[in-house]
Structure formats: structure tokens, C-alpha cells
Image (cartoon, rainbow, N blue to C red):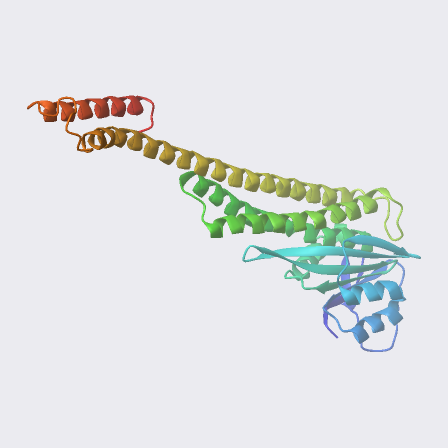
Length: 322
């Protein structure tokens, strides 16, 4: 079977390994519970667990499809919790799913597409038996908290990219590829926000509602999971706002630069229009024209052109058009 780890615990201490390949029962006594972790199991492997622990068929079907949004389902004295994992790959948020079966004396985690194994979490809990002794409900909290903690590095990595875009947008035009990156990141953050909402609802339900297998003493721990989800959601909203600001600031700066170029071109066109007009008038080859036969007419025309051009240049300079 695709079992990563399977052990029986009592009073926060590991007792023995669970043998699931044999038809014999687990023979758990009072105060003992089994924590079984699987990674992308086959259907027949989940059917074995279904027979062994009395798992609900609908929960098994959900665990097999691995395409559920975060939720909490109650089946008699058991819980079925779905959580979504997330990790970043080349500015794309990739999602996985962790299905958790919780019973009075067992907790089974089934991971699909998750890049983070629960081995580290298991070792941390085994090193702190004062918490592990609470039983399956505290392990459920620890697994959800472990999943939610994985969101923060993802958001921080995106935040670094967004801040780099913001600095670059103030110094130069955004290229087509950079604009495409902005829209891609906005789309990824919108999809991620749709996952965070149900995750917050899962933590809130486990905290405030009476659930089987969840003791009153452990329920307040789920508020910590909810607060972590809210913190990540707040960061996601801030990043979306920054991305919008980067795009709007880039558009505004580009319009300002284009306006400055347009004004500069208009100023030079006005200056060049003076010699063009004078030269055009005296280039019409009429015999009777003012000052046409005066020996100083040429110099007067050039001086007039230079004077008017210098005046226009000075006015445009003061107006910051040049």
C-alpha cells in the first residue's frame, strides 16, 4: 500500500506500527488512536481502509476523485475534512488536496498532489506528547495548521515579484511580457482567494460548532488556523491591489511620457514653421514683392526668422515643452 506512516499512539507516545496488510483488526484499547498517512493511494487501498475503519462510501468517493473544495462533512460519529494545499511553480500556483478521515480512535490523511509530506509534522508532534495526547482532534488541527502555514511562503514569493515589478514600472515602460505577467499573477491570486474562503469556513466550523471527535478543549485551537487563513487572505488582497496600482501607475507614466514627447514635437514644429512660412512666401517668384530688390532684405529675413525662432524657443523652454 502507499502508506507513508501508520502508528498507534497512547498518551502522546508512539506504541507500535499499524499493520494494514493483514486482515486482523487493530485491537485498539481505550485511550489509543491510530494515525495513518497515505499518498495518492489506489482505489483498492482505500477500500481496505473503508472496511477496516467503517469509512463512509461518499467520503471514499470524494477521496478518490480528489477534486473537492475545502469542506467538512459529518457521517455519524466520524468527520471527513477536505483541505487544499498550494505551492508555487514558475509563478503558477499549483494545488493539491488532503482528505482527512477522523473517527473516535483513528485519523487518516490522504494526500493528492501535495509537495509537502507530513513526516516533519509527525516528528514535531511526537516530540511534544503533551499536545499529541489530546488525540485525533489535535492531530486534525495540526494537519490543517501545517497546510495553511504552507500558504505563507507562496504569498511571500509572489510579493517579492510584485515589488520588483513596482520598482521597474517607475523606471521604464512595461513590456508586453511584463503586462502579461501582471495579469497572470492577478488571475492566480483570484483563484487562490477562492480557495482561502472555504478554508476559513472549515476552520470556523470546527471552532464554533459541535462536531463528533472534536473535544471542547481543542476547539479553540482551530481559531489559530482561521487567523492564519485570514492573514494570508489579507496579504493576497493587498497584492492584488498592488498589482492594480502597478498597472495603473505604468499606464499613467506612459501617458505622461507620451504627452511630453508630443509637446516637444509640437514645440519644434511651431519653431520650424516660422522659416518654412517665410521661405514659402518669398519662394513664390512674384516680381513685385516687398523688399525684394533691397540689398539688405536677405539679411533682414534671416534675422527676423532667427529672432522669432529664438523667442518661441525661449517661451517653450519656460513652459517646459522643451
